[in-house]
Amino acid sequence: MKRRKKVKRSTWSVTVLCIAISMVIFNTFFGTKKEAATEKQVVPVVKKVPPEKNQGKYATAITCMDGKGQGLVKNYIIEHYNIDWVDLITHSGANKILAENFNTPIVAGMRENLGNSVFSSHKSKLIAIVGHSGCLVNKAGKNEQIIQLRECEKRIRSWGFGVKEKIILLFWTKNPRTIQRVW
Ligand SMILES: [Zn+2]
Image 1 (cartoon, rainbow, N blue to C red):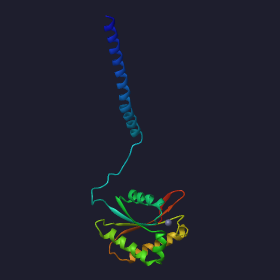
Image 2: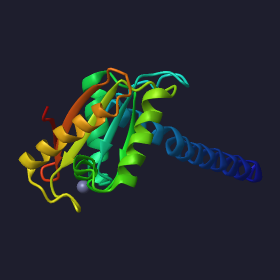
Image 3: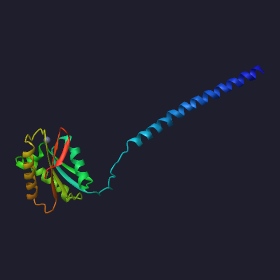
Image 4: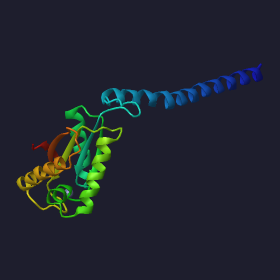
């Protein structure tokens, strides 16, 4: 009898231990998932659905290589002009170089890239020319850069692609990080 009682007691202990371990394991896996789900609900992720391959509207931006502005430029164009993709043609002080036309190989490269964006399957119909404050190369102030941007627009139109692209001029500042259309 004593032996049977002992066996019964030890079986009971093992059962309790098993239940405890199961609860810990269950909590580890399912408890964490529940938390993650709640977190997701608190911060909803709104993402524009990317178009199918070879679809979507393209724009082109001629802008400085400065990485602080490229996200601003792309987002501004996508949000304001119903665009899906933005081809970036970048160079340090791009607007100064294009306005003054002093580095002809670089300007020729810009023209070639713009032609690729406009005439390829991208069929870009919107061109943004961009200036910014605190540039490593272009030390001109905002007003002077706006004059440069207008010169850039004239130069691009003089290339006579024969396409009626819409051209917009943008200017962004580093501090605070803002962007606005200036023409
Ligand atoms: Zn710059």
